[in-house]
Structures are given as structure tokens and as C-alpha cells.
Amino acid sequence: MAEEYIIGLDLNKYEAQLCRYDAQKDDAESVMVTAGGSRESFPARLAYLTADDKWKYGIEADYFIAHKGALKVDAVFDIASGAQEVELAGKTFSPEFILAKFIALSLTSAGITDPKDELLSLVVTVPSITREFAETADKAFSILGLEGRRSQIMDHAECFFFHTFYQKIDIKNRDAALYYFPDEYTVSFLSIGENSQTKPVTVFPKIRGEQVLPFEPEERDAAFLDFIKETTSRGEYSAAFLVGSGFDRNWARESLAQLCRGKRKVFYGNNLFAKGACLAALDRSGETRLKDVLYIGSDLVTENIGMEMLIDGEPGYKPLIRAGINWYKAKNEIEFILNDEKDVIFRTSSMTDGIRRKFRMTLPGLPSRPPKMTRLRLSIKYEEAGKCAITVADMGFGEFFPSSGLTWTETLTEHRAEERG
Image (cartoon, rainbow, N blue to C red; front, side):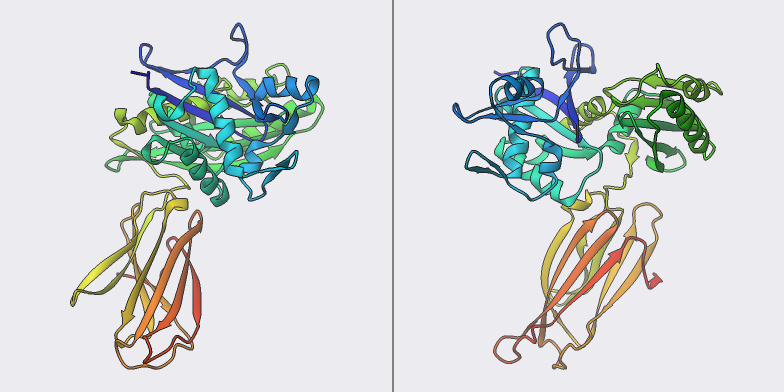
């Protein structure tokens, strides 16, 4: 029987890296991609050898592009985040094919040659998730035979949560700060905090920010120092993490000294997101150790959305969107018949504050018809985090009342409502 691997893959615009769960050490370990174990990350790039119809990835791709005339497929993350197909030597490749090929080849560095049979759980983490990337990833997972719970995408913020809480880094009564350097001249900030008064304990992103850094090392150090003072002034932090290939302790002298003040624990490393993704994959495989902790991130739907209507002749509630799922998976479509109403009324309830709200959607121009002679088709779909698009179409009622062809659209923003109740 083949070994079943648990893998986290971090992918951004420039590079990628893998972590593999080691059951004996009970920890996520970086997968090295060079002989002697000197390098964790590799370029997020593919090379296509037209004569052999073969593909290479990462460091090996760079060699074949430079010395063997292979065609370069750069910025795999950007390709997967768009709808543009890639044309190489007269052939066309879809974004999902490119992403699936990159994932499959990357996994070979962890000894995985058949993801469908050898992977128990895979989490791919990216800086932020768009609908385009989510849809491409779903198709790529299908190509790899990893549909369903065996595969998932996750943003960096949620991986930061898994990395911090699986390692039991104490942030009680204080928060954890993350400074991420995707390159030498950019740093982003993220903090997470917990509310221990709730059951389960809830953890959530609190503050985000970004700063462009100067070219000169001394100026860069000074700019980062100011950024640290600005971000840490808005909270108390028991731990801070410095990650990303753009950070170098050689220039961060005064800034690093500032960050270490106040008995703050400071951690440096380049595999936080990949490790967090791997621990998330472990959690998703059924080995959860965070049963008493609930992460509420920006990628989660935090409100239940539904409608009150007659169901089989009796008053009832029809759920449309359930809280707790990722926004890019939140969608539904139903058809229903109006009685004597002229509006569509939605009920929402928040998983964060428990408040119930009502939202009324008007249908201007809807033809006047007898009760139960208007059939409507309702489509509901999150377009981005916190914003749900609702479309209602007049379907008429058979030959008696033809459709008017009218449609109405509305955007329901989480926590927007006409009234509570």
C-alpha cells in the first residue's frame, strides 16, 4: 500500500515551497529542492520542451530554459488567477492545466509521483484568493484526481493561524504579528487575535497594512523601523514573525532591535505559510487538534442567508447560504412562486454576533398578476469576501402569463439589513 502524504504548498507570484508532515516528529518539515538540503523555495515557473512534449519546474526549469531551448511559462500564480490560456509552439494550454502540471511536478520533490493514490491531504496557500483562482484550483485538483476534502486552497492569513495555534505559541491577552516580505522592497503586516470569552474560542485577523521600502539598505531599515512603530502602536503583541525571501537581517539592524523590545518573542523563517498549510492539511485529514478554536477569516461567510416561504403548504425557512463556508464556494439557485407579495425578503443571522436581520429586495416593474401566478428564479453567489450578488429573474407562469424578461440584481453586504428581528 502506498504511503499517504500530507502536504502544504505555498505559492506566490515569485516562488513556491513545500512542507510534508512527518508523523514520527509530529511536525511539518520543509522539503528541500537542492542536493544537500540547502534551499526550500523554488521559482514558480515551468519550462516546456517542445520536441519531447515534457515539462520541467522550478530550478530545473530555469536550466532547461537557459541551456536547452525550452519555452518559459513564467508566473504560474498569475496564470492561475486569470482566464488567459497559454500558447506554446502552436499548442494551447488552459490555466487549470498549467496549475495542475506545476503542482504535480512540485510534489515529485517530496517523493510523490501519483498524487491521486499517494496524497491523503493537500492544502495550497496563496497570498489572497480571488474567484478566478478558486475556480482554476478546483479544476486543477480535478485533473490531479484530488476532488473533495482531499484538497483545499487557503489564504496566507489562515495559514498563519494554523502555524501559530498548532505550535501553541502563547498569544493569550495579546496578539501575534506577521511581517511578510515577498521581495526586498515590500513588506505587509497582518495581526491575529483571539477572543477567549466565546465558546469555542474565536480567532480572527485584526489589522492589515503594507509599506514600500527604499532601495538603500540604511533607508530601508529606517522605513521598516517606522512601519514597526506604527503597526505595534495599535495593539500589544506577544510574538512577531518575519517571513519572506525579501527579508535580510544584514540591513534590518535598528528595526529588528525595535521589534524585539518589550519581551516580545520574534521568530524568523521562510517556511511559515507552507508549514501552516501542511498543518491545515493535517487538520483537514481528520487529525484536528483545534476543536476548541474557531478561525473566522475574511474568506469565510459569516452570515446565514435564507428566506421565509411556504414549503409544502406550511410556513418554513429555506436556507440559501450557510455561514462557515468559503465565500468562493457560496452559491445557490432556486425557483419559487410569489403569493401576493411584491418584494423578496431575506433573513440573515450572523455567526459572529448572533444578531438576526432582515433584508428586503424590491422588484420594480414586475407585472401585476394574480396570486401564485408569478414564478421567479433566484441566483445567489458571493462575488468577493463579504459581498453577495443576488439576481432575480421573472419566469412568468407558463402559457398563461409569459415571462416579462425582467431581471433584478442586488448586492447584499454582510451585516447590511433593514431591521433586526
